[in-house]
Image 1 (cartoon, one colour):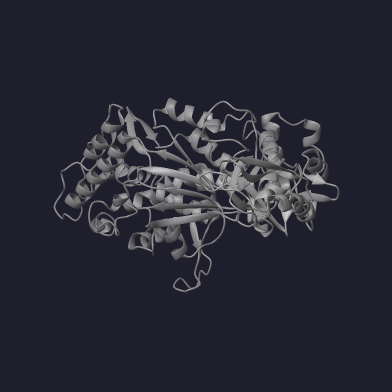
Image 2 (cartoon, helix red, strand yellow):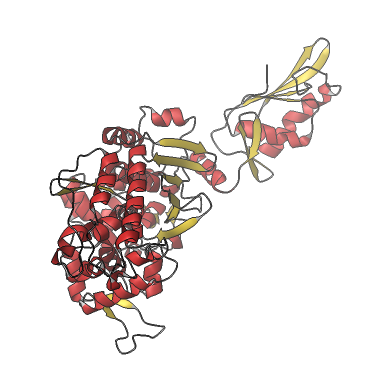
Length: 560
């Protein structure tokens, strides 16, 4: 017999072993054998008769519980058996809480202690009342958004949806007496971090495990965090492989939208908010990883999580409101749906890794997708280097090689590749390869043609565009009907608040404003989509940019 969850062996008695008794009481119970060595061999206990009387009294006085202490003998050697029952309420030893885990005895601290105490009291973290927060402190906009979602889902009585803010919050069971629960703060407060440390999301693009290229943090109520996170990952961090079927443009992303949405919602709804660390999303060239401080139900392993199981939300009050809104289900099928969605889309099977401090969900990218992106990057870099800057009329096609290389690995036939040629002053520049060079170059991740022209060494493709025939590729994104993704991205960055040029560059993943960004901002001002906050001081260090009414209307009309 070996030491395990239920058995511990000690050669002699010391009062510090009361911690082991406390640990058994706070777990599933167990037995402490006094008089055995580490190999389980009985070595005897000379003062066993005295300890038989002392130990029960010490345990009663210091732990407040009763245990059975039995005298045993083996090969003429006496030893003691201390049998500890599991207790439904928390047991402490001198103000410290211990719990048996496997063959070790662990002191509970921080978030682990909070979880333990709440569980023993029959409560959950999100159901604890928060003093000092009133219903008037909750965001009217957040509650209005919930009403709209719940009305569309049909999961809440229309009468309740028309009720006052206070009546609705009470109907959602987010109050306890005169107090709001933690769940109400997370769901509907503009700044939940004021009460819950780490209640936000971090997203970063990594060139390697140690090299962070750029990042964002997203804050606000949980509904806002979910919507903004899903949108930002999709539009800024994931790159699409572009294919064409006839005149129809097809975008393929490495992670299916439905799987990405389910994963982000699961991370926000089911995480342990007692841990002061945010949900973290790490994006690489070949994979996307989501981490959250998740806690599985008692006795669960990854096998339970991956198999068919009943719903056991860690934050039932938060999960209930998200269910009423139609954002999630309550049948314990979130992980199953993610895996099925990826299988149906033909993307690799996601990976789950459970660590002591949280759960990782990893989406590997398909080999075909990675080949497509690599081929697209090489072809655009080669074509831009070869064609930009020529003073004589150019006759080589700009986009045909790009289309062929991007589309072939993805698996969709190209029925109408772009083959128009670029000549100096040629009116076909916009209608032919420019869209591939500007629009597809950004959206498919081929940054070298537009966004990364300066950083990737293909400087001529961006900064020298005005001097060559590629000028249309820069200017037409603003002046023509081409909805350049970088233009849409800049307008989206300015949608919520004015920002300095350095802030815009940072949001685009750049360390500083490039010459191309300077030119593009000037074009946006000329087209009346963006304006200065200090019109009379264009070179002021306090200068910022904001959307005009025309810019907001234009941005709203164009798909993103």
